[in-house]
Image 1 (cartoon, rainbow, N blue to C red):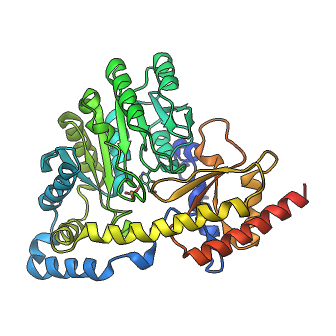
Image 2 (cartoon, rainbow, N blue to C red):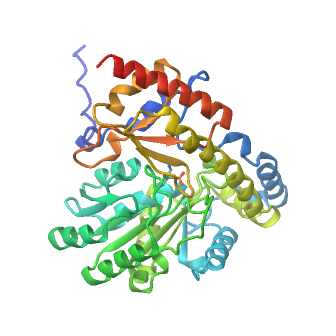
Image 3 (cartoon, helix red, strand yellow):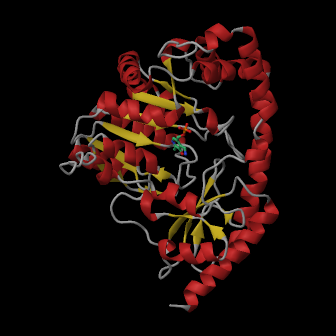
Amino acid sequence: MRPAVSPPPTATRVSAVGSSPVREILALTARPEVISFAGGLPAPELFDAAGIRAAYDAVLAESPHRVLQYSTTEGDVDLRTAVAARFTGRGLPTEADDLLVTTGSQQALTLLATALLEPGDVVLVENPCYLAALQCFGFAGARVVPVPTDDDGLDPEALEEIVRRERPKLLYLVPTFQNPTGRTLPEARRRAVAEIAAQHGFWIVEDDPYGELRYDGEPVPWVAAVPAAADRTVLLGSFSKILAPGLRLGYLRAPAALRRACVIAKQAADLHTSTVDQAAAARYLRDSDLDAHVAVMRAAYRERRDALVGGLEAALPAGSRWNNPAGGMFIWVSLPAGLDATELLPIAVKHEVAYVPGAPFFVGEPEPGALRLSFTTHSPDEIDEGLRRFTKAIEEASSGR
Ligand code: PMP
């Protein structure tokens, strides 16, 4: 027999984009002994399993022929109606037909990339930026250009200068409780960003999976609500952080022509999001009180954030910086010069504590001392213990220098 000829290799875009270092770190830190500040995971003990189960039971008992069948690409009309009512109630008038249900908000990013981007197109991102968005734009062959940020998020002056130079097709933003920094873009900056988009003609993708997890202060209006850019802003939402990420349910609110393009892209991707999952979510929104459930999560997460922020002063070496985000899941830490968060991670894991180094979130030159801490999945006591372990790891790393 002649030797078999190898099949061709995978497309270069796979190796060019690469696997998410965050997912790899999560695998490494999944041991139960590890106190992990790494994952951006909702607290599993807070899932409303009984309410979700009741919703599945109800739709499967009452309309099995419908909920087990193929359905429309746009998504369950009851679910879209309920989501539209939530947007409208929060100051952003929305109809069911303005929405496309997606398989997690992550899919919305892929659909937008497919619908909008040609290879070589420029996408502007906050620096640092949500990692899986970088992967997604990378797969589309986009040239990703970073926009500088400060403690209040994206800097509009820097944005304008970069826009003049780069002529971007879109700007990707997580303006509220950003991943990885926890930062929130103030209202004046949102207006400035919208004006720049209006003047220079580019799309804004406003990704908002964390906005409902607010622990202090008042909500800031969405960029999508600023009239100047209403015709060019796509707003993404998700049930992952307020209900359960395993449902893989998100939604996209976009101007009609772009939404139709995303529908076509979604037909090719997965025909539609799971019929039964959408029906159960719609039923949950009808029969259960999602806002009351979110209030329970908010109270628990506020306490956990306070435990983590409150412990950092004693836990971190002099010269460290960190923020105290008003919501979301993440605190952004900068260790003093000489400490590299990527090099420190294996030492931390040896001490059974974990976090995500900041480096992979940067486009271009990373800040070596930056790291992301998530406070959602541990009790205040576990957080205190995690910080004691982190201090020991830093001491070990510093003594070895
Ligand atoms: N956008 C951001 C900023 C995120 O942090 C995440 C989840 N980590 C997603 C989108 C994707 O969320 P999902 O697909 O679960 O809705």
